[in-house]
Image 1 (tube, each protein chain N blue to C red):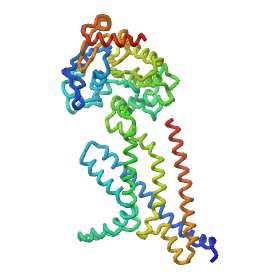
Image 2 (cartoon, chains in turn yellow, blue):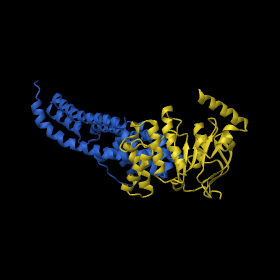
Image 3 (cartoon, one colour):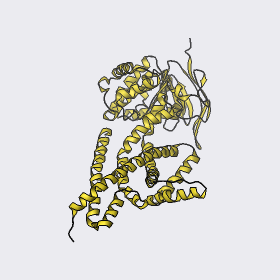
Length: 250
Length: 226
């Protein structure tokens, strides 16, 4: 049986002033899918992801989440976002709060979880991301990779149905990337629906069910990881992959 | 002429102490008024409502562009006259005029401090709060305003010290603050040197420890931020 459609995106367009960043995006995301979005910088990948949790407002077109039009005026964005977690490129941890508080603040305030239960779960999540002993630490004392893993734990604490990742390893030193990708692999294996904008080709190839190649505000090509990486059809995809894979070898 | 500090101390100090109370009262009330008003002005100037923003900008620029002493004169002398012209009679005490004048004036300066502190909070903090499912207003209250206020505390501290010293201008609208008391004493006793020297020392004794406190606060906050 086909899995249920989580996101249905129809003719999505986004302009920043005169600049057309998303020209016409059509896509379906199914429950449990891990979708990686790749493409050159400026292709609109991040903007697309930000449209999905309404940090950017679509200029035109529709995004349906479980059948509901989230682009409709007066849509209750804050309630919807509780079900759709987001992990940012620059982590965006709350700097004046401890790691523990970063993770528990939203469940306690929004899901009315008791403090004790929230902290217990936070510790579980922290041990999942390999940072159990860091509950009392402040973000600025952590490395980028550690901060990003806390950010993932923070997103998971809301028990989201979908997780969005906006270039989660792009701001990290190369030696810190592995731990974050490892955590993401484990989440993917648990059946979470994930949409990941990434430059990590190896990760996209190994972990995703589907790879989407974006260029110039369009979906230029999509397919299985194997299809995209070994038999790309679109010349733009070929050119892009040849360039990044060569860079990775160097 | 021999200087007689002992005499001046014994006679002037009690008067200075009771006028110090007046000064502290005015400062406390004016500072609270300035903080609250400043906060509201800052929030208004940050809102997306263009008309509100424009009106507040005009008010802020007007108040920042005229001297505090003139504003106090205006409130003390002109307001009652204007009301009289309109057939109403209000009387405003010098102390009230001082509190209003200082409160309004400092509110404008403090609103700029608060506004820039709020703008200085990384937008990523806002997006993180929104992405977790907080409403916009809750994001402001939980994740933006607290660090913004915390980061402004040393500046507020310095404004408080400046305000205490500035209250001496209220002598010109007859508030019985320390300068006026000293001036009256000196005029009566001709102990000009002693009286004004004592006054200056008293201001110093008040403001030095306060600046020290501000410095310590600043260090602590910087340390906590790292």
